[in-house]
Length: 242
Image 1: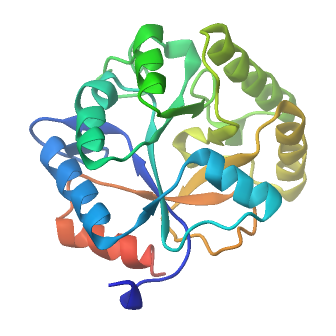
Image 2: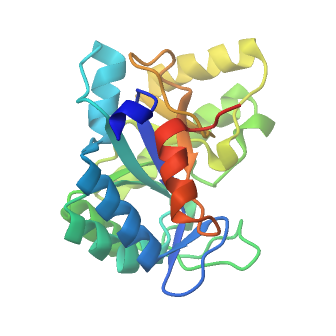
């Protein structure tokens, strides 16, 4: 299979998991099980955020055909539905947490969904999953000043540590958005360095060439529940083609 795939780091982006129907941001339990089982059977090498951060900072080598599994927003169904599936497949993942909403509901969704509370986040961490930053208030960074982004990142880190959690030094941009101008992005990168953010993830739907060219522009592949298993396999092999 690997002869017919683009080389590089894949980062899968999941959001919600459901027992029944899937949509653009929701996969079913059956879909998730099929996807993880296929990845395991095909020989993809599962890596962690910490592995990716080391590869970015130290040029440390990743295994051949590396793949990182991530979930956004800390939905309760990540714990209740995704965790058992990934445990059966021997896979660990990272969850990006908007800390102002811990124990509440997803105000950004048309129909808000329940999010994990602190004890449930601890349960995920105890299962070996990584917890990382997703903006304290789930903000669109393309609309914020550098000072506002800096304050939000510090609050995101502080809130996770205040819950007794040890956050991974990584951030996923909410909505995949970040400042547009070169000067604003350079200022954001500097504040990330100062705050302790080592890597940041966008969407992009592309395979990341190795070694990583920009540690704050790592692409993720969005996994949709309204697409076929064949479409999932094609996206994994090639990413976005155009």
